[in-house]
Length: 78
Image (cartoon, rainbow, N blue to C red; front, top):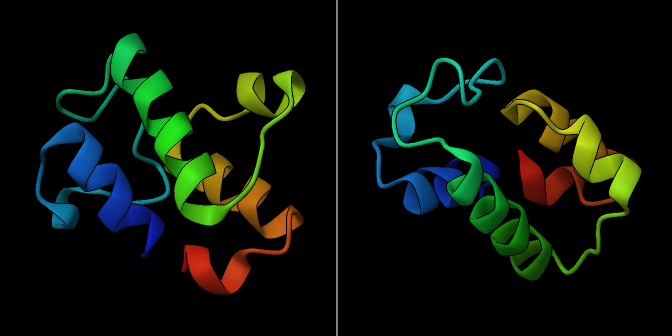
């Protein structure tokens, strides 16, 4: 599953509304509770576990993609 598809599903928005700059400040339905839901869904979908420093560094979709790339899931996160 693509990262944008997963995030769009969690946020209940159209995938076309998302870009690497998407964040809680500029994306509908992205609040603190959905941010946690999103991180948990990403961990499950991509088979990874985030450290606390990684979690606090992921403020937008591009940040999430970068962390996933570092974990070797770049092809899945495209």
